[in-house]
Length: 294
Image (cartoon, rainbow, N blue to C red; front, side, top):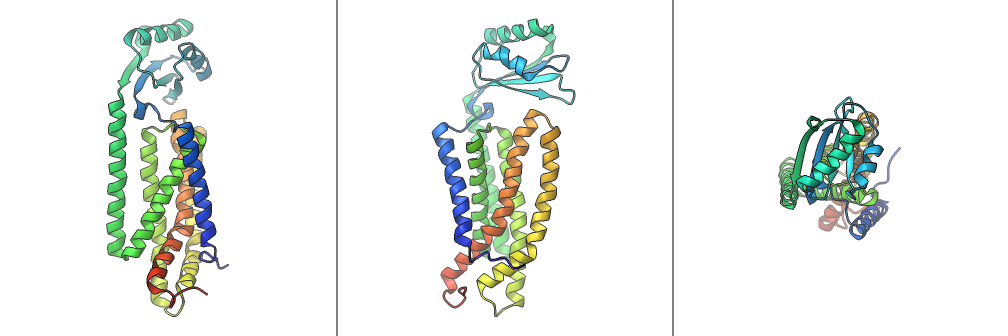
């Protein structure tokens, strides 16, 4: 089966553009669901001594209008983590804990930790996240330029930006809290996507040397056809492992693994349907019409 990637490149661009635009619009109109790591707030870590219903604790915190997120901590799920974007005073924290302690019969020692986060910490995390992504992108740009050529590098960076925007759109559409795991997920997807893209580009480079009479659109279609089974199989095995984490993991893990699944799907898509067509477009700017597709 021979894929016609270049013939339908406008369709691939359109699909990605629609998803990104919808996600960004929903995110900006409704406001991205920034978590405590970015906005600042209060965190309380409590040992309940038994597995309790998160919804019951949620009912208690809702009395104080905290709009808190509550998740299990530990393998036995006997500890909980309460996070709220509100900056609570010592008296407010004590009152909330006493309400929980009274219902479940726990002592003051069950309050394992209390942390207060200021907005400045959130700004610092944002700054470091942007710097990390920029450093990773520049490093990849240099590496691919040295190993291949600048047009391959530019196409790979476009694919990376595509994947980052898809991830942001995913968070905007499904209102997933944006916390520190968001940064980790972005960096993982950047690394995963570039690895998949390099596999395709390596085959393109080899085919350019072997089949010199074919045009660029034929080279791209041939190369993607030869590597697509590898890309899909690798992604499927990775996603299966992540799905297991999502099913059997705690809530905090689910907030990390669900976007990761979307990111891996996006990375696989971009390495096949975005990176190669962008490389083709860049070459057409230089070599057209000699190497233009039929």
